[in-house]
Amino acid sequence: MKAEIQRSQLVIVDMQEKLAGAMPKEVINKIIRRIELIATLAKIEEIPVVVTEQYPVGLGKTISSMIPFLTHAQFIEKTTFSCVDDPKFNTKLIETRDQIILAGTESHICILQTALDLVDQGKKVYILEDAIVSRNILNKQNAIFRLRDAGCILTNVESIVFEWLGDSNNPNFKKIAPLIKDIC
Image (cartoon, rainbow, N blue to C red; front, top):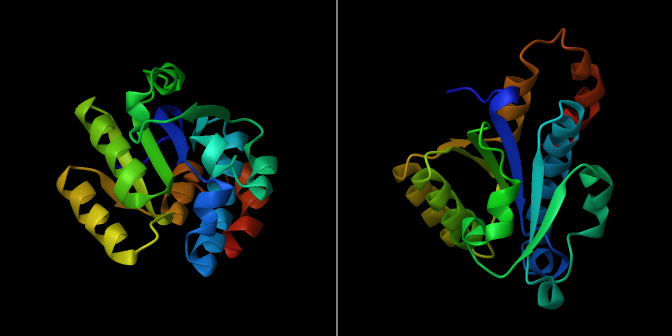
């Protein structure tokens, strides 16, 4: 099933300073660029974006370099590992938008638990495999297997971007094209 603009919501989970510092540097830098791309297109296409922060007192706020492309996002502080277990998160989800696109940290903890709970709620969950990370690659791989088994759609940023755009004649294609070149 293709992701559709009118049905999509983007959720960026726990892309915070201290968590990012614990991730492989070359990996986290690529993930930041990929999230910048998808968040920028989400803003242009008016797709709702929710950004969560896990215990920001201890783990810091969202990575400062990401803030300029998240000006349209709604931020939620949480202590639960599954975003769904935080009532504030659920109030930000738009019921008529059943496709939830997930990116962020950590694959085997907050991404996994959130995705499993969203699937249980009947949502179509798209995991941006190239925009999630764990400190240990084996943990990410295990999460990917579990997410696939649970019925999540494993995809990547570029696929969702082109599904949202739908056509090279889309006027937003030219706006976003320079960022597409940067995500490899």
